[in-house]
Image (cartoon, rainbow, N blue to C red):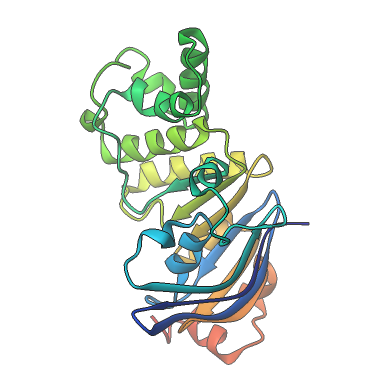
Length: 250
């Protein structure tokens, strides 16, 4: 079953092709890793899934990205409502310049939750889901910028979960973290699998092997192959995939 279906997607930046006619179905309720060399279009593909590509000057997009059967690239689709479905973790954490509590409560407030008790329950639930509650429960009114980088990324995960998304998107979400913090984030993603469709860009093959149920391999803007992780990493069909997995392409 597919939650996200990409059809004939092409993206260019100021006339330079970044993605070339990509078609792939992302399995529902699983972790999909997008892998490939630097500059192959991994982040571009991810940013099309919540229309962050709209914020890139000079970007031209054709084709479709279907979420629950709706082409989200259609101009009539409300991007703000779309992003409520799509939690997003950037490469580096970007806590809002406000308290820990207000970071998590920010999204629910925007979407109409006003009751203080309900907001408190949401904040606790999401901080627990991000393995952060026990570390911050006594200082929820402190500035989020006082947290360590690893804690900030888990806070961003809690903030993403607070809007009750259907999909979690991660653009190398552990690359800026120390090993212990990266392990905590990975563990939480594994525990969230099944409740969410999770799509991760990663440049770490070991991480893809640890986390992903499904792998999408891009090379120079082309979709080379995709399939179950064990199948793609152990028995790639294409010479370009074999070269990448062997470390001959960085």
